[in-house]
Image (cartoon, rainbow, N blue to C red; front, top):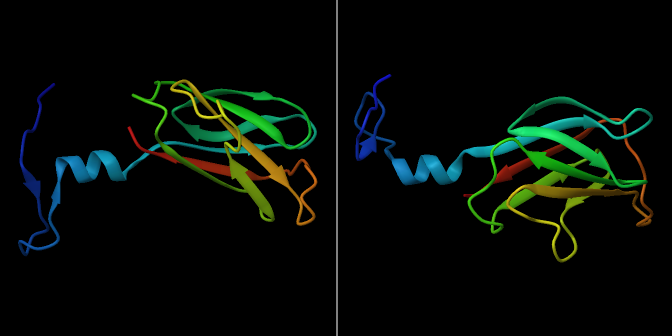
Length: 120
């Protein structure tokens, strides 16, 4: 296998350039779509090897390849309200948590939940 080493990538007109760092930092490092209701399971994913159900509306996702540090950004959507993290230790180099709640703030399971991770 060959390695391509460049300082910047541009479109054919020489515009819209990106550095290797911008590409590395800006691409999704992991994403997951999962069923959080009934039989909890991953529907599809990238760099997410498994998940743990921690009870109503609380899920932990484990990375296939760990993050370099715990200072990454994770976002989730469940069609109503969802958030990632939310407490100390929710982001580690090997996993992150997703919490789902209804508009009143009560934890609930949803059948379609998405999460995405950016960072190192």
